[in-house]
Every structure is written in C-alpha cells, then in structure tokens.
Length: 181
Image 1 (cartoon, rainbow, N blue to C red):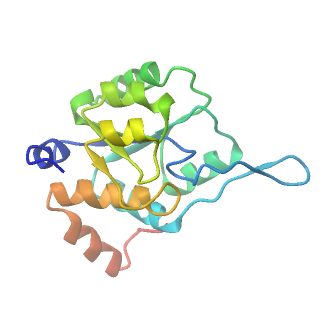
Image 2: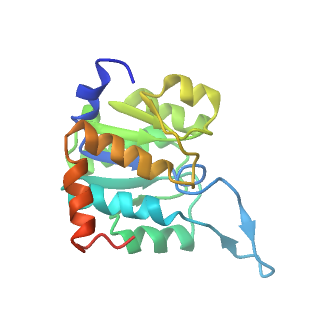
C-alpha cells in the first residue's frame, strides 16, 4: 500500500463486493438437476459481520446472482443485493445515492473486467490475489488471499485496521457477540 492510501482507506463506510471471483472462487457448479451451487468462505462471512457490527455497510453488485447468493446475503444481513447487473457503474451510483454514501467513502472489491467501471468510480478499490492483472494493477489494495478463500476477510481486516478498529473487532468475536458467520 502506498503511503497516502491508509488515509483513503480510513474514510470508507460502504464496502461493495462482486460475487463470483470475490465471495466465491469463481467456479460455476451445477448439480444433476441444473441447480447452480456456490461455495462461500466462512471467514469472509465473519469478516463481513465484523464490518457491519462496527457500524459500516456492505453490499453486493453482481452480473449473475441466484438463490444461493440471496440466501448467503440474507444470512449475513446484507441489505443491498443487486443481481444481474449489466451496468455496474450505474448500479454503484444508484447504491451510493440509496445509502447516502459518497463515492469517495465507498470501496469496491472486484476480480475481472466488468468490475473496472466500479473501480474508476469508487474512492477505494480492492482486488483478490487471483484477480485479473488489470484489476490488480488498478487496485489500492490487493489481498493476500484469492477470491472465495478469505479475500473478503483480508479486505475487511485491512479497512478496519486503517480505522484502528481491528482489535475491537477481534475482541467482539472473542466475547461471543453476534458475529455469526
């Protein structure tokens, strides 16, 4: 991270995630009946709960979607889920307006070309370790973990650390708070 970026990260109030390649490893799996299956990492869930319990918002903007994602978002308490988005830039602008969050106070996490429009608009951009090279090159922060394997948790810890809230989040998880992942 560059010297000026901790101050930028400390302003973030809204974390917007892509799904496939960020919350999942990007695999698309179908069962014998044609139902799509998704695997989510429990550490990412704990991180998102910690982020929201610290008083911040999380949202998902994805070009795909489906029942598995809706269920996971619901389990985590993510209120803003935008599925089947053909224009992620417009979706991010609308989300910022709906939440009353300035784009400068918004971080986006994406892994491939459709997410570049959000990277250009948001105040802070994050890419998983295995994101396409174009996104890693434009990201303020690249996580040590790949998508679907703890990358969201890495991002949350990074953002909480920038605000000096990481220790408090750890303490809350030890105290048995509502950090169900």
